[in-house]
Image (cartoon, rainbow, N blue to C red; front, side, top):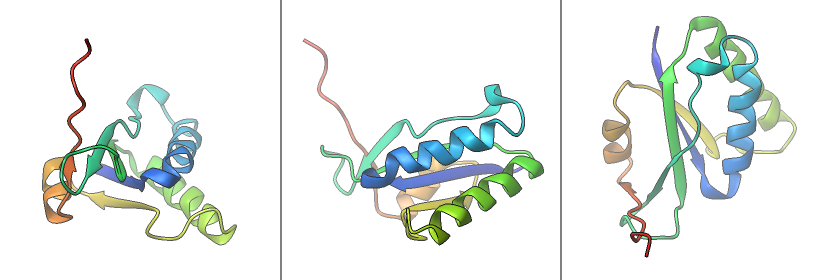
Length: 108
């Protein structure tokens, strides 16, 4: 079962999460992550991307790709607004893209 990392531009985060939620309905929703990790080029706000990933069974991956393709065909997103990588280590993905985790200030 591959681990898929999904990267969404911040402006399209809601559509990326919508695709994830729709995909989750195909199989076990408990196996599905969300786009929780905020990223930017320098680790400062505002976030420009969000990433999330999980072990995605083949049927779930097929559904994810179909839903992503449908959103592209509908003009809701471009191909680079929500992209995916077959890589179990999100750190390798964000390093390759030149991104860093956004470090939020501590709560006061």
